[in-house]
Length: 188
Image 1 (cartoon, rainbow, N blue to C red):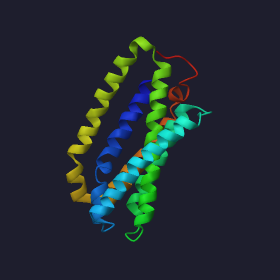
Image 2: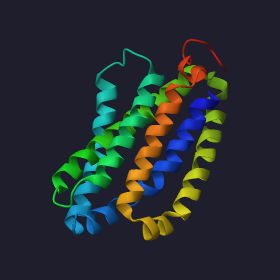
Image 3: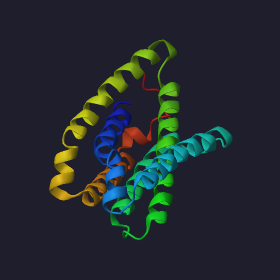
Image 4: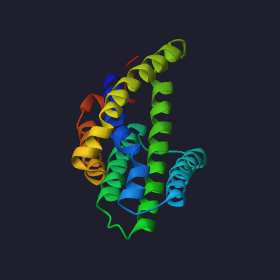
């Protein structure tokens, strides 16, 4: 379980700084305005809703740990694509943003299901409380440097770096044997 939490906190740390820069990317790179910012935000939220609907309709047949790891990689790819798409491809950016929202939602749903399955009910509240308290710390640290990062290296490059780091987290999580065994053995 500790690896699951560690990688989930790492993904929060690498994604959060870029995620709050969607409006900056929309206005700066894609030359959008208020409407375009609104579209991107609605599509991100809509993607998250679609991800939730997908999880509620279809029962996941395989390992939820594998699904979480795949979502790390997919989320990373959407951030990389957001950073490298040409300025004239706003529609492509919107579609990539929707896929990112879906992948984040599927990650959250599978992560929660894993924790609920692996942790005994009497410890569940404490485990979630501890996780969410600890998950906030890396995101706050990442958010503190967001302005500096955007100013020094640019918003596009921030998205590309965040995406690459998210993919690295996904690769590391796939290569962590104890994590991949989660669900096969009871840990808590």
